Length: 112
Image (cartoon, rainbow, N blue to C red; front, top):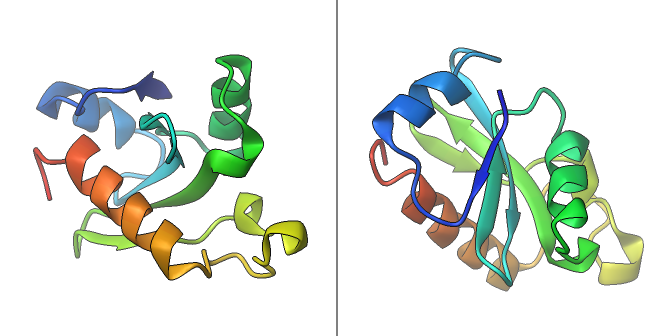
């Protein structure tokens, strides 16, 4: 189940987001408009939903939350963007990482 919103996820929504992988929730966040799409099988699914809602691709970054360690990660194929100086799965810009982590903590404040 994919849920996209600009407010924090409720405990009930987080339970539904866990359905795909049980111990991990994939997320794509529009760091400019502060919108999160979560719970997808593949990051590009959340990316597409956000683009359809008028997000710009340059503002979309992927990662997720390990539900066993509660660690936020910054890894996704959608992050590979040589034109934005990001040539790896992991977000390379420290500024973008900080924004992504802060927004993840906001959207998942019920568990983080």
